[in-house]
Image (cartoon, rainbow, N blue to C red; front, side):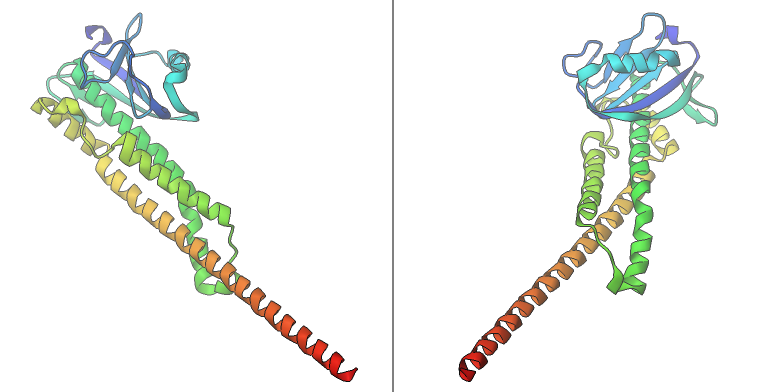
Length: 262
């Protein structure tokens, strides 16, 4: 670990929905993620949540390494969300404006940094996905208030919107586990304090709760629109039935008049 130097760059990439780390080499102990050393300097840490974190690895080696993971990546994304930070070895663990400071570049502390950056980059992807959907709610709300009789619905779009929101929630609560602390903190007060500092610095809890609120609004709005759409369709069906009954009555009356005339 001393080969990393006293100041180095960290880059986290969200490359897919998950990374299979079972059977991968480089895992020192169960609480730690897979740690893959490079030939010269630097390491890569693989997280199950679909994140690869590089420490002191030249940027030109990032994407070739990610490609080398091949089928270990489940649901690989076309575009990788990324997060960058600088780590400096100093006198004590702290957070400075230009760097994350650690008293020593141990595997455990780098794993903590990887966990926090991994969760931050996962939140960034989810925030971007919700940001694309959230602005569409206001125009629909205005139409419901001002021109309810002219509302236009696309059932497939509404169902897709609900599904997208549920997938984001599932990923955050399930594989990402943004609000859960990693197992490696259990037996170390020092690591727990470092994780808490970094968690506050990247506002993981605040961002996660804000995202949950937005997802609730999106899901509720889409469900409301879907229910209105289904109600409108049921009304149309009822009117069709009434029309058919009236047509049958008129037809029967016409037949009776014709028979009476003959």
